[in-house]
Image 1 (cartoon, rainbow over the protein chains, first blue to last red):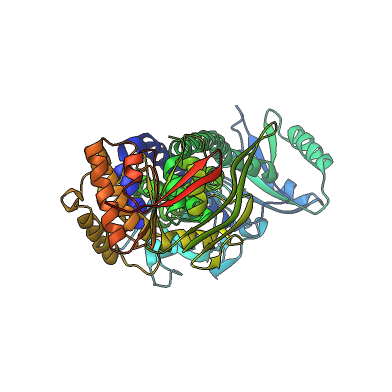
Image 2 (image 1 turned 30 degrees about the vertical axis):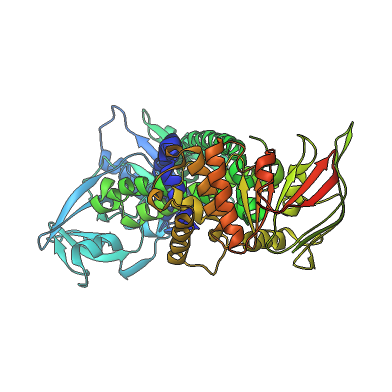
Length: 383
Length: 228
């Protein structure tokens, strides 16, 4: 029967060409959307690697003031630590978690080259963000002054640079590895877990003035106001801005989710259009094929078989369209387009195929049931 | 073979009730070639549909091979139509998007036990039987009316049914083609098939073994004919 239906659809290919193009185009759009969704979902399920609740990023802008900067950045740190509401403080570069800033650098080891995110942080960073180490330790003040700068890397950097070697104590460029953490997705859950290197902030560094302040549980906005007021009084001419990481995280999520949601809405309307088109075409086709339906019933088809035939025909039609679509879609994982993992594209293909089959089945169900109710004696005598 | 007892068929709409068949009692025996005649609207096609189990009577009983079928399910009726009945229609009812061979194969698609190769072979044989073995790859649009009806006959006989029901098989054909179709039907009858044919053509009807006349839904004549 399947072969019969393939032959029937193939012989009607000219009549079905537009419908096939419509299904093909829907598949491609769904494949695009599916790739975005699969990519983001697979990122989302990867652990973030740190805790952000109760952590504020306090940004100090010295404006025109350039006097005694080293003293001032240390005073800020000591003052912040002195608050009873504060649990821990860490100073770092402007690419703090969920910020929009990024710093990348290439690192090399034994002819292996990796592009890595670089974060300049102090000894309290891991404690402030509750980042567990999987090997070694976080750097401390005692690590400064040596020939190489102490760094902590994440597992992605370890895998890319050192493969199966133990990374602890290894030197690459000016850096010596003292510890390894697991994940670090600074831009939030939707970010790819990319290679990261944490470099220890140097004493002469006065330009990185982001302080990550971890507050004690129950600390409210009153403290935020008090902190801003006191700091502004202490640092005349400076601007102080507090960004709770919870809020920054939401902004980062919006940057990822808004395009996906817009694309989803467009796709939804496109699919409704396709569904209505399919539904109309099938209804018309059944009206045109009443004689055939009558004949099939007369020569031995049950009502159920007639109904199934129309569903199966639309599956065959969808299969032809999907085969053409797949020819295009499989190029993405083969050619590693956009440098995404093959699994993302394969997942997107599976998702798009499932949605297309689901959609065509849904559209075919009602018309096919209508076809099954056509009385053969009536249908055969209509001409 | 087929027995109709006190058959009545009423078509009802919200405003009107039409009695299409009234108290029909009929037995079609094995190997018979019966024709049904009557003016337009007298119920010939309705009677053929009821004999062919395409329509259910409002009253009365039908039995096929001694087996009452009135209470059969859709699935059982479909199986019975597929295995024991063959249909030929005035307007052929061929599927234009399928080749001649594919059209002839259709009844066998609903028999699970027949393989694709067997189907092809049986369809080829049926087409040979009607003299169209050289047209297997043609499409219905490429055939004349007579050829189309021969394809329809091949489709009706491909499953080797015991009973062939023909609804005005020569109605759309000229007399030469009509005679050709009738002689094929006669040949099938000689080989053992039971044939019931609805016709308007008195001359065609007289070439069958039995002539059943209908008028206003009632059977007004049932004559056994002697062939010259």
